[in-house]
Image (cartoon, rainbow, N blue to C red; front, side):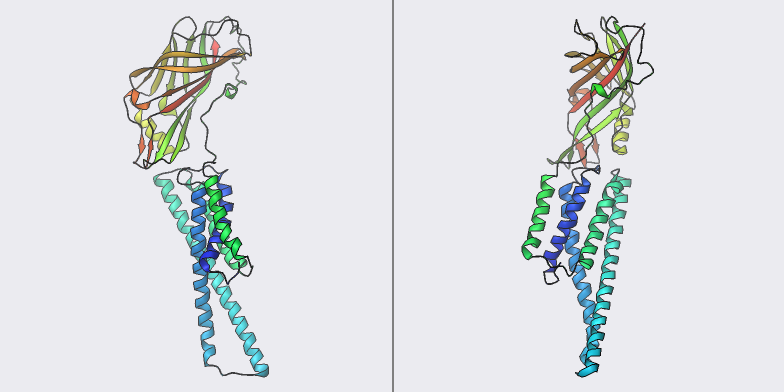
Length: 374
């Protein structure tokens, strides 16, 4: 970068470059909080570090050059060979001063990186998981990329128009890809079922069976999370495989889920959920309306809806599940989806120290394989 460019403008251009690289890496990395750590916040952080680095580099270089040139003011003007030697000595001294300035800048960027790393550790211990694995690589790119561009590319000349355009492009990319982040999905599908189970074969034809036992399955919750009561919103997804129960096509069907067993990408969220349901951990859904459409054939998918009672923490509410099902691998395979209001079941949506709160809504999904009973 041209040393004649103003430090702030040079720093913005460098920050934009490192920010674009870090933002691209942040997409495949799973952010611990897409509200606080996304492509836009990464780019903004890189721009700030770029400006700080450029200002610091100019200050260190100017100071060292001033100290190096100070004794020269006492020297008399010389000519001939001695003048050439003095000029060569001055040039070497200037290079040495520049090298020391570069070392100081690398040292300052290293200290800045360590400070950020300590902050990431503190936040991970106190609040969010995965802060280090997400933030450390990005911080390394930004801090050490800034140091490299200031010291290794300091003599590269770039048109001023390009220096101005780079931060604008980086911010546009940050805004445009802000919502594109590798967030776990709570969506389930019939194809998620384990068809390699040793119980996959049964002597009873599922097309003639009337009662089934749930053997393999998974449940997910998906709830919107809001940052500091603003409109900045992401989703939390939890998973569990603790499904159990029976399906009775002629009587009462019952499905149970252990609510304390849900696991998400944040252990603190999981502990809060587990504490909430410790006294009464099982959610139970009962219905007398479970039906398989007549004439269904093996491998054919059918859709229907089922109404029943969902009981959580001793409170029961009527809910409707959208059902997708099929007969396959010797079993009745079911995918169910429903939406509930959390407060309908007698408790408030959980909040993480008032920093992140949960909206009063949740989508529940279950997918399971039920084997015919003898």
